[in-house]
Image (cartoon, rainbow over all chains, first blue to last red; front, top):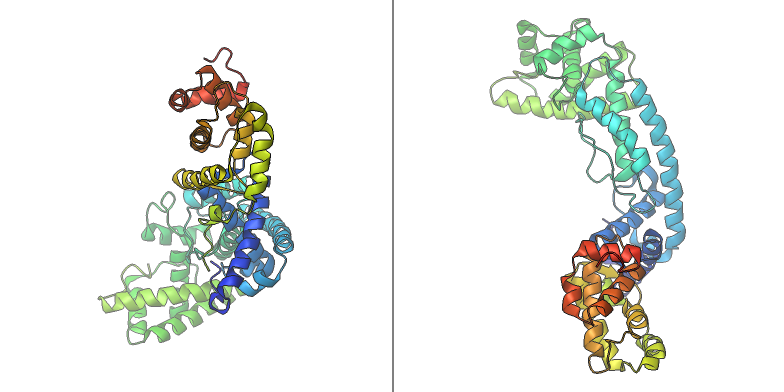
Length: 295
Length: 147
């Protein structure tokens, strides 16, 4: 929430901000109840207030807003103007999100996963159900498909949905460079029920692709033989976590270049994923092996 | 900075004297009036019932509407006036919650008045009324065919 700079404001200044926010809340409440109810449940009122802050935050910081607003801006600024700017900004983000969602729908991977399909379908209802004028922080749809790197819980409303769609699009973009027959054996080794279970598809595929990169192996066969798995183990065993991360990233970057899937988002996703993977490898290596990582 | 709205009910700005004037303006024609202390007591009770029913409210609350709606009821009297207002106010917020925000303030108060008069001014009857029935009365704006 907007705790930043709180210590630089005295009690009077804080009370002033609160009074301004309450005035805006009163206006929003009147709109919400169509002026037909002077009171409302505390949780509804709190949700309306959260929406006001979220909207102002988006207006000030756009897509980068993660719940921190400079209180001095609230102190000196016209909150109603800031709120209106936020609404306009959210409307633009909704338009962008719809285009993004359409692209995701059109580029679903050839390998099936029910939870991905259901999630993408459910996001389709978000655009209809998103009541951004009153509850802009809400996410009125079911997002169950797990991404390789989860979206920060600090993201709310349209910002969460856009971040989710952007990352999902990047993950799915990676699959488009592989033939179904190349991916399915890896997924079968990872989880034979990959079609119906809540698992992430990118993780096993990119991990094995990185493995191929480490071995300078062609990627028309992503699955690893026992010998190849042992070679990777030997390669990474003596390295520190930082070194593992670097090695994996270099190998991954090579893979991305090889398949010409090397946009900034592709590389950023790889970077984030490799960090996680390095940590995992480092952890299991000390526990006695890397079984179940490079499949 | 605490951004919870929990203390919103403490920050009412509507002037008590203005509210008092408005309340008494009409009710006095029916022999009912509130002193400043009476109104302060009603408003204090309002804060408590808002907390107990988990609600927030802007402005001076519902008391003016209650006075306007109930002052010409044959079952209102000066001796019990403050007590009745406090209880009606409590029931109002309770019903508001229990009818799941489906009724406007005006619909609910009108329904309460109809039931109050029907029962000969019994708050116990009003309190015990099935919420579904109260909802129907509020929507119909009448008791006909419902009670």
